[in-house]
Image 1 (cartoon, rainbow, N blue to C red):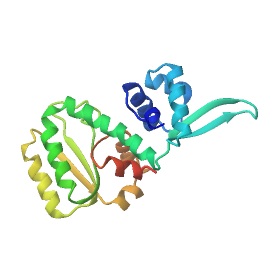
Image 2 (image 1 turned 90 degrees about the horizontal axis):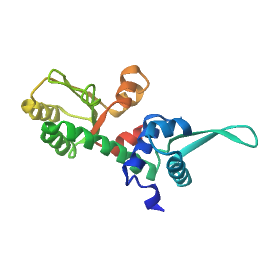
Image 3 (image 1 turned 120 degrees about the horizontal axis):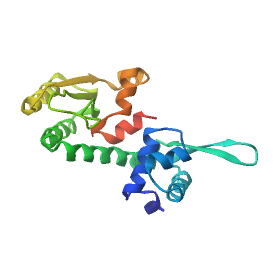
Image 4 (image 1 turned 90 degrees about the vertical axis):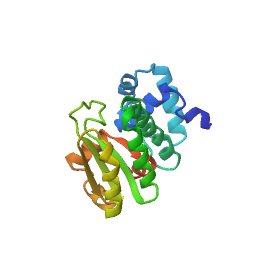
Length: 203
């Protein structure tokens, strides 16, 4: 069973990513967004629904379903499955911006010993569209003290450009999740620490 739902191929990852980034996506749009054959999409989403990784809504008449809508189920195994999508996006980011790998690694190691929930990159770097003049935008959620802030600034002393760092606690992030800034961050981001915690908050 587990092998059928794991995102162990590029095709499955494309399907999961399309659903993750477009909650309540319909079947025909899912085929288009994932650039995958209808039969493969159908087979995989049926397995995901069967195993409670996806929540499905069926629209239509009493006897026939006309539209199937899919959204992530951020519970239990679903958290792990959709964390794979975040890890894949982080991998793409590091392949494009190899020079940033030491900075990302140091931030991860630093936050692992703190009460940080998650840390993400947003803006042009997250869209993989940064150039030499782009700022590096960091968003950190958790209980972060002044010592950690200082150490992050020290890590960025080797960065070749400008950077911004925004810090919120979990309650602040949740309270503002529906404003335009946070919605843009949720849509376009790269998680560099705490993939599972981020996915949990999306519930």
